[in-house]
Image (cartoon, rainbow, N blue to C red; front, side):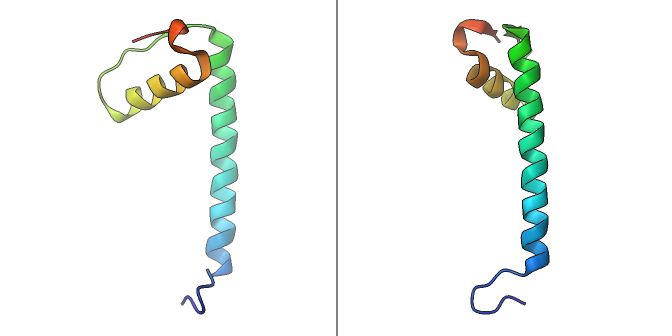
Length: 67
C-alpha cells in the first residue's frame, strides 16, 4: 500500500535494477551499431524494425543509414 505518496521500497529497487539493465543493453546496442559505420535496415513497419531504424539514425546519422 502506498502511504503519503511514498513508493514501496521493493518496487523502487526493482525499477532501479531494470533501469540499469536497460542502460547496459542500450550501451551494447550503441557499440554494435557504431562499429558498423553504415547500415541497411530492412524496415517492415513493425515495432522491432522501427526501433532499430530509429536507433541507427540516432547513432549513425541519416547519411549512413539506408532503409
